[in-house]
Image (spheres, one colour):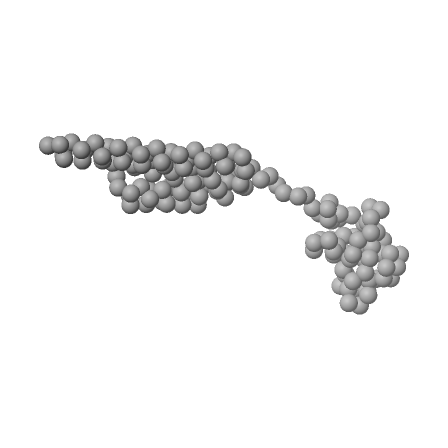
Length: 154
């Protein structure tokens, strides 16, 4: 009788300690996420809360760890990329994209290899063209490859 009572008390105590331990992990992960936001610890926190629920309902350590891993992985795969895409914004604007379609002038001959320099909008740019172009030729920017502008004779 006493052994049975002690066993029940111990299993209830273990479930509570397990739940509290997982909730402590969740709290620490949440504090780290708020302090250093990088969308990683929030998923650890979600998994730890789910594992705490499993511990509260009396499941063993293997089920708790499995629940933690599954919830953390599923939430990471399902949400991380969506959250980053929505919160990161459009990124750094391109300096060359607004130049497409504008006219300029060749400042250093575009040689037979297709490379030279041009002036567009008062700025000097590296340029590429399929045909050689002498200095002073009016050009039109048709595309940009990084910081090199693709041009044609205007």
